[in-house]
Image 1: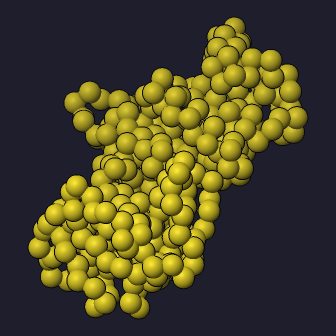
Image 2: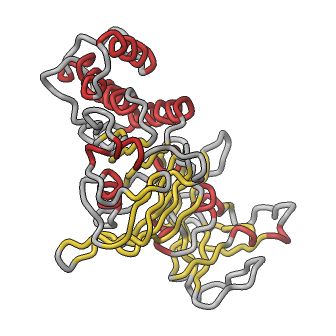
Length: 365
């Protein structure tokens, strides 16, 4: 549901105004949320830039939904402060915050048509009927639902309902958009399609957007930055590329995609950089090449490290093959793109694994 004030109030205008002197749109300052003695979010600090698409990613119980509920004003922090455009909103209720919210179940009014669903937040603001109609018509065109205004939500597909929910969140032109697992109810193909639609809407409207999800692919696809949460705390914050390529902890490496943690004594780990104390070596499966033991070495062989092993299993997944290769007592995962004429290895075959030493990363355990 999109949450708006019934009409502009001095608090809504002054306390959540967009002040050009403040570079950060949202600041979460050392926030803790307690439920009894349990800290759902603990010592949470985060700055969100104006117009940024930021995703909070984590498994169930990590505190990501509580973080969003704090931002939305549905719960109040037990400690700390939340600033929007430099003004504290920690004690401001949700209905007095100028922001759009899209929930996982869309929260459309089932008894209202699509058009009336979109009109509702504008009507709550006291907007005249002619202006409401103009905005609704324009938004229906933008979300590809021009001919669906008179339909009820039950007459729409999941993707269409999601478009209505997004349109309703955007139609009042709020400065901040909050998305709670927005694509969780859709099947894979539709989810990928809607990822593109959300990305396009963000490019067009440039709203400061906070998205909560447990879907790693969704986070990587949509975000300018990703916050990975674990047990109520921030584990790491960075761009999608940096998080995937340079995770700092084993948890982030394993949660954001697959990772080979190379801590076995079965083979030597060679890398371009010295291994810091308290870390283990890691390499992504797609960075490992698989070949026959007698295959000619590559031109850049002096930059690579190689080990021999035996295929435990091979999984075919359309554009990818995934190998599990036993090297001593260790299991190394290899992911390669399927290509014409490519050699395929079966369980029990001897293989050689190679990787660039520069692709080794070190993560804390």
